[in-house]
Image (cartoon, rainbow, N blue to C red):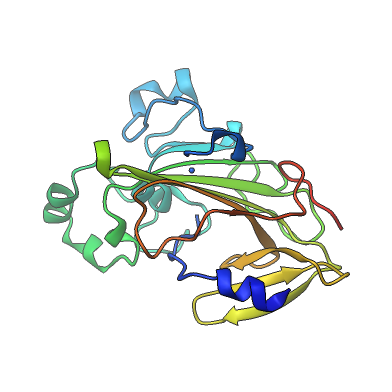
Length: 227
């Protein structure tokens, strides 16, 4: 079983933060208007100028702004960076050359929609701990490009169980495999401690470094999985 799973492993894109098989994606992404600089509409939509709506447990905007506004990195040089990124990579980096030193800037105008629950991140933007054995879940929908060049990837993470065991495959890049107490494949470890990557759905001509489409056999629904 483990040898079969290892064959399925591919190089992982370094994103912490989906498709052609519509019935595969259990948490479909609606047609939400892209938020990038939404300060004049805050009271109406609940989204801040970067795209976060903490009260509704969601983000909708550019990946750059997700990093800029993430409460997980209050001491980072990019925290609450002004002005928000509006989609023009060249213009923004010319006006703010310091962004060239940010490790995530290579992803350019990538867009992101995230959903999570209170057990994962509170309405105040506080990350909840411990995650192990909780009901926490979070989803990411990355997309980039236009027309024939457009691609998207959907990822779903849920909290791991204390009965699970972890086999690290690539400690440097934060990649491994979670197994249940019975030795069954539960899902992948991917960058986040005590979380299981249980679903990946791709659409379009995705970059070669992205994760392959897959779904954990132990996941009947969002935020729920077998012990």
